Length: 83
Image: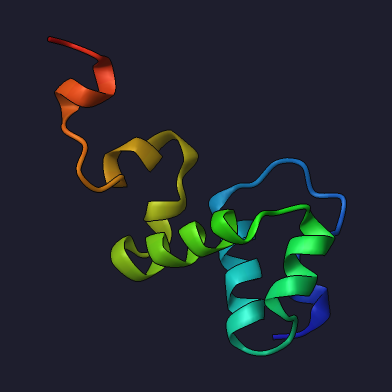
């Protein structure tokens, strides 16, 4: 992995591939966590959530439209607000 594999610093649309590239860059030591958060305007918590989702569910866990399906402790009833 090289710096050219990382998303551009002005990335606005975070598809799962780009999130995975940032996580891979940090894990490989190409970029530090602090630099990644600064470069992409991410909170440490957001980055760590991407990392946890990859570890638990693979790259598919990073899909924004499916994120609620992977949140621990929530049931379908909790997500839709049903009583």
